[in-house]
Amino acid sequence: MERFTGLLGIVLILGVAFLMSNNRKAINYRTVGVGLLLQVLLAVFILKTEVGQSLFQWLGDSINTLLGQADKGALFVFGSLVDRDLMTKAFGPGNDYIFFFKVVPTIIFVAVLVNMFYHLGVLQRIVSTMGRGVHWLMGVSGAEALSNVASTFVGQVEAQIMIKPYLKNMTNSELMASMTGSFACIAGGVMAVYISLGVPAAYLLAASLMAAPGALVISKIIFPETEKSETEGEVKLSIEKTHANLVDAIAAGASEGLKVGLNVIAMLIGFIALIALVDLGLGQLGGLINMPTLSMNLILGKVFSVFAFAMGVPAVDIEVAGALMGKKMVVNEFVAYLDMVKIKDTLSPKTIAITSFALCGFANFSSVAIQIGGIGELAPSRRSDLAKLGFKALIAGTLASYLSATLAGLLL
Image (cartoon, rainbow, N blue to C red; front, top):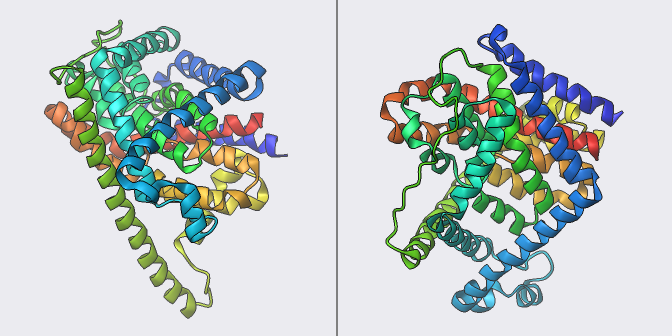
């Protein structure tokens, strides 16, 4: 039954995209078909083949080992506060780490690695190679292919920096595809943080890889190409070396990582406190209308339970998964993943898998402002276009994540 509802989920997601399309006659079904096929092949390889499972299990374990090195630096600075065994003895099971001392060092370490590989040109070569493959297979322009692939490695705005020379002349369809890719993917550094919190690494890796073709599928249904693109052929990757040498790049990465880490902490304090305030108000309102359990989770769970059901989430977990998906869009994926990790022992393995995929991406309301502001700085002449496309791209990015989650649910 759940497999059947998964098929229903694919129809629902593609149907919503089709209904939102601004020109149904212009949809390139080759791009849509090849993109879906790529997603299916990736999902089958990663989730169903012995080679794929072993490879991604190894990759996940390797990433965990790599991230464990951040603890060495944190241990030197913070001492016993990052020793999980000592924390467990002192405060009991379930209180083995303080969020700040676990997450911020991880962000700093990953930022150092990203800056180092970017300065050496390794990251750009990987992005360029994968971008050429997506361009050739799906028949999309070079610029949007590069942007979508880059979004699986770096942040929302950083991905657009790699195609900065082309932004001002990109068609609206290309711009929509690039924004959708940034909403549907998560940066490698952010993925590392979620893995360190306990989100299954193999699922995050799979979701990130599947997001690039999925974002192109949904964006090209909602906003198909009707103009002549200047980047129909392959484009040269924009490489800007902003650091004097490798040591400078590493030092800058550490500083940038600290800023990002502190921003994450501030964001979590603000958003979680705001959610508590909203729940307090809803609880008071619920008392007046004989609904004492009224809360944001309850409301979001009801609203998004349709998608959770269609994705194949087991019936017992539908409202919980729906609440997490809703919180991801309304607040952000960080808070949603934190909530999922807290309750994962009460969820079925299939629910954890589908939800891990569905939450993977930057598609939330605050990210619309980040993209309009960030990309607008790179191409000021496109700011009005970015504003017009922002909400559509948000929906498209969300649907792309849901499509990956549904395919994963069909195979598990």
